[in-house]
Length: 166
Image (cartoon, rainbow, N blue to C red; front, top):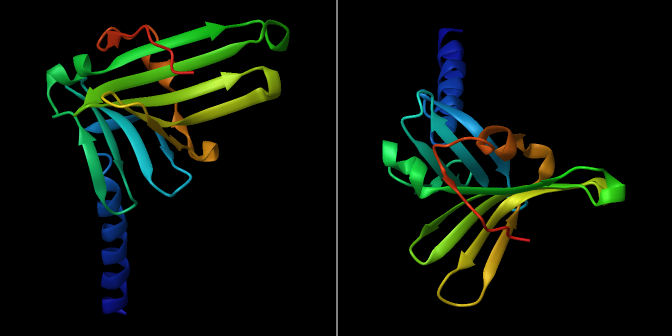
């Protein structure tokens, strides 16, 4: 029985450790989702706003983290949005984009809503800045947690962006 309990507790420790690759104890999630191909995307902040970080990877392996975790990290991100109310009659929409550039690519984390059709989309677009082309890594919308607009609209720690990516 003792070994059984130790085994179970070890398993819980392993599961908790697997989650640590995306969220450290001193961080909180701003926005996250699972992609349609099973990857995980997370935007997190240190609880005292010491840094902002983007993470991407598989369930058990962090494949990309940007930028380094320091106070200057906030200014490496830009946030842009378009909010048009009025519902279907006015083609209402809520478009939110958090983006950054790294090694010749622009990473655009997005969350969009269109009143016509009640359509919601989320994902990450990776745009090649040196050549034409991009890849759109779509989210399973049912896995979306948090809100880009809910956090970044009015937030002055990131740069104001002007670009919309539709």
